[in-house]
Image 1 (spheres, helix red, strand yellow):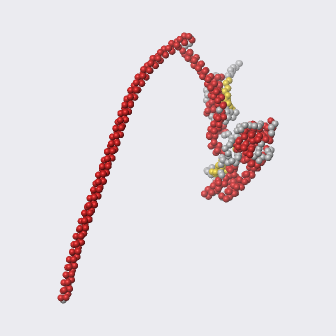
Image 2 (cartoon, one colour):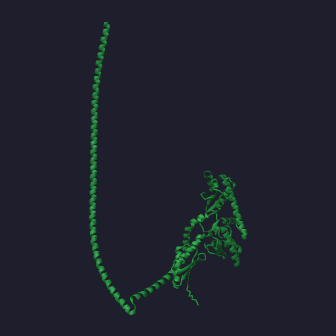
Image 3 (spheres, helix red, strand yellow):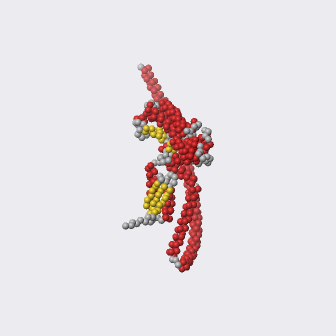
Length: 510
């Protein structure tokens, strides 16, 4: 029992001692923590104090800087204001000086005006005196003298105007070539687009619009293959039962047309078949061109022509000039040249040969920068044609000098073939409109009773009333109408204006 009590007391004493030790340790830790906290607080306090001091110094420097910047701007503004005031003062002084100068000039002008008015009054008095003296001497009033003087001046002005107009016309004739070239260039600018549309397009007719889809192909492969093989642009639009072939080369258009015809007829349209058909068509067309050239030479009785020239003659079949087929035109020129040469006793065969080949420069494989007459002459020289033929080809548009009698014959026959009625196209509506415009232009003048456009619009007959238009006025009216036609209208060649004045006295015996 005592042992248990002792153990218990010992345990109790241990517990007490342990608790005392623990409390002591805690107290010492607490004091250390408080000391550390106080030390850390002092450090934080010092740090915050230093940061606050630095910020204060920074704000102070920024404030001083801003004050200096404001002072600088204020100083510069004051300097500018002082300069402006100085400039304004200088300008004010300059204006004052100018005002003084203007006042002096004004006073001078006023005095001069007074002197001029005084002299003018004196001149008017002198003029009245002289007019009175002249009236007494000539026994004519002032109005009569003025009228006579005006009539004389009018006649003189009209005479000088007619002389001047004749001089202008003569000068215009001297400069006719340059003016003609300008007119041709202007005409080309006006109608080039229409001609390109008309002469660079072929129409391929189809039975139904379903064939358009087959020609186009899946994702456009067929039409791209045709364009690549032929070099022709194919236009498939809303035009019913028609496909447009566009290309400047008529041979390529014909190849594309024939190839499309064979493909549509065959029914097999795919890229491989297209290449095969186009290649075959090219070969066939080349043979046909050569055969056409040979046939034309045989028909005309022309022999020993170079094969390359024969091929070019065949190419003429697919070329047109002003709506006239070039091969037909060349054959016409050849036949006409032969007839004229035979009548004049010249070499018929050479004339016929030159007539056939005169436009050979329009169908070369290459397109050099030369007029077709000179190009044709060079081609003829290249392929061994005689000098007479070469000169006729090169000179038929006066590009070179004519050296033989056959050259003017070919030139004349070329003009005859082109001038034949119906040989070259002309839109009927435009033709009728031009004739009506000619007649209405003449009828717009006073005294014109009727007007008639004759000779396909190359002559204008104007009937005038004898009571309103004199013989002298007829000349003036003819000149005025011709000038108005020249300035306001577009026409081929020249227009002859004839004014007819007739006086009839009619009575009846009853």
